[in-house]
Length: 369
Ligand SMILES: Cc1cc2nc3c(=O)[nH]c(=O)nc-3n(C[C@H](O)[C@H](O)[C@H](O)COP(=O)(O)OP(=O)(O)OC[C@H]3O[C@@H](n4cnc5c(N)ncnc54)[C@H](O)[C@@H]3O)c2cc1C
View 1 (cartoon, rainbow, N blue to C red):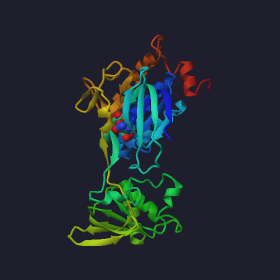
View 2 (view 1 turned 90 degrees about the vertical axis):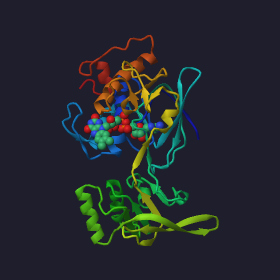
View 3 (view 1 turned 60 degrees about the vertical axis):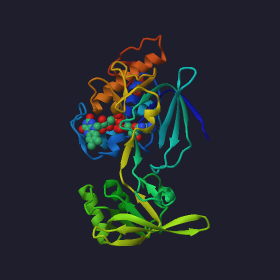
């Protein structure tokens, strides 16, 4: 069912820029809807470097990507933004009454449950799309896409729901990839209680070197030695299927090892973690003034060529632009003030301090402490 959500502010992207945008809008009393194609917050900080330290966040000498996002989510909690996960904003168009209409498309690639496509009508729009919407890299084997979502899943997350955790009980599951997420998934499946555990858990990577935290590697090695998990090195070079009535079932993969020998590996399910590549995609089609695939903004309001549409974070460009998280925080602050004026053109938007303003403290839920 396609329902329309009407709002004062919609934010495309829940990376650090989009999250801090929620905060700055919240201080000004503006509630936001946040849409991201991923099933969770964090953008690059979570997808590309969750455990790496960041040293240049003001007043935070060091924190990891994951810690930064956790802190931002805690900081914006009082403002009750509505998050729409697994939804890619595909189109933006003007309405007759100077608002903006957005359409989303649910993404199965993230492994999250498919939600119906949504339509938003918003007075102000904040594009915080970073380097683009993250898409799962596909297995490079013609024909394999026919099994997608049935037997081949991309970036499936075992922690998403308890029901999902158990759906491969008794099956032969091949996890594809060599990074932390792939290893975590294989480990979690191999460790399920016996009633829920797959009959066989295999991990396949194209190289023998795996890139994960030392404790994850040690854990994997222990499961491998206990024969709870099998690790293989090689490339997928073919597949086998069986056909009953009109649906084909994937029954095996051909895996070619580094010595050039091809093995046939029987399986029921493939969980592929081949990385996520950002795709600017739809944002480029929204009729905004672009320069080298970045959205052009002014550095007073961080407004794009369309009135009421702002762009913050890695997606925007202006003279002197630096793609740093700290800069996106400044951009989101000024964009919020500009949006408040856009929403109430005749009202004065006063600058207030969180330390002394009762109004801001009420919005933050910390008044009278
Ligand atoms: C390895 C690495 C280390 C880094 N270290 C630092 C550092 O130490 N300090 C620092 O300041 N910066 C660092 N950066 C850069 C920093 O991560 C980025 O500047 C920051 O993530 C940009 O935030 P953002 O919110 O603009 O975009 P992103 O973090 O890219 O988030 C954008 C979000 O928008 C979503 N999105 C995009 N298009 C759509 C759409 N059409 N529909 C729905 N959702 C969409 C994406 O899925 C994504 O979640 C580092 C980057 C990398 C890769």
